[in-house]
Amino acid sequence: MIVAEDTYDSLVDTIYGVIFGEATWDMFLGRWNEIVPGGRTTLFCHDPMRAQGASQIDKGFSEEWVESYADHFAAVNPWSPAMSVMPMWRGFLSEELLPREAFVRTEFYNDFWKQCGETAIGMALVKRGGQMFNISSSIAGGEPDDNRVYADTLTRLAPHLHRAVRYFEAGRSEKSIDEMGGRLFDAIGVGVLLVGDGGRLDSANEVGERLLAEGHAVRLDLQGRVCLAETDADDCLARLLSRWRDGERQQVVMVDGERLTLIRLQKSARIQFFDAPSLAIIIEPSSKPVSMDVPRLGGQFGLTRAEIKIMQGLLHGSSITDIAIESNRSRETIRSQLKSVFAKTGVNSQSELLRLVYFSEQARRNN
Picture 1 (cartoon, rainbow, N blue to C red):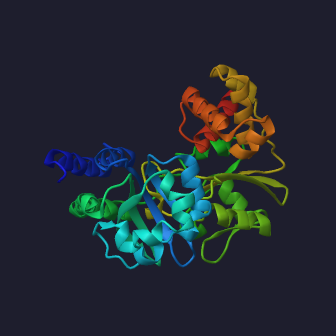
Picture 2 (cartoon, rainbow, N blue to C red; picture 1 turned 60 degrees about the horizontal axis):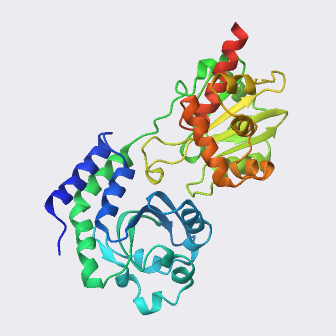
Picture 3 (cartoon, helix red, strand yellow; picture 1 turned 135 degrees about the horizontal axis):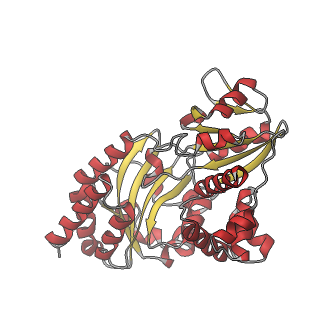
């Protein structure tokens, strides 16, 4: 059995479509899953030394599966030791990492993997600083000889995936202070800092630069890294800049009487492994409190009362979990309502939603 040439060509076309912005990794993984029996696929990073790992982009796995891998099962992944020494750019079977008779006796298999597959194939794409970035697919069943065709197809795709990886590794952050509406924040006396790799300052609006120069709540160290004046807040900044997925994307902290909203930015169509996390810090000086008429704005966009409450919660720094607990609803319900908020307001992320609210408030004050 072999993968049909037109199917293989379609996969190659999708890879180059990702590079040129005409396709997404989600599309590539979806087409790949159509080939693999019962396939579910993830592009994931793993650090064997720290026993940490996280899915960066996945197709077919539930959100609970992805979260449980990052929270616990990455640390007990029995494939990890052998995976770290596998050659790059060669597809492999999970049986090459660990014999099946040993695998089915592990906690990883019985409590985690067998809910989505019996075996797996994969390929190492990047090894850097002790970390790995791999592609891995679950397979519903079949003998190793039957599944070899899928591992070999990954090997055939390796040169094209390699070009895509090199492209994304060479890429730079796509966020800018102008994209975040720097002049708008200047107009209402709010500072904006964009923090990139290693906590270094990428850019700042005029108010942000002034606040950095004053050095009360935020300052730069000798290496150009952004530091917060209080230890707990500085630890929060470091946590949000971590590569490892922990579900936390936004946090509000009070530092020296100023309200700082830390927002981890989404990267458009990028794989986070190739681009260090970046963060927006919104600084509201205590002398210039900014009150937002969220219900009025929600009414303009036809938001329901529940959606307005979610919007208010996010703007006050609450997480989806916090909002779910406070409203006595499930996280899935809150996520669904948040998607509705995004759709009605025409934004794609919490940072864009924050920008929309500030823009609307400034327009209201000027009228």
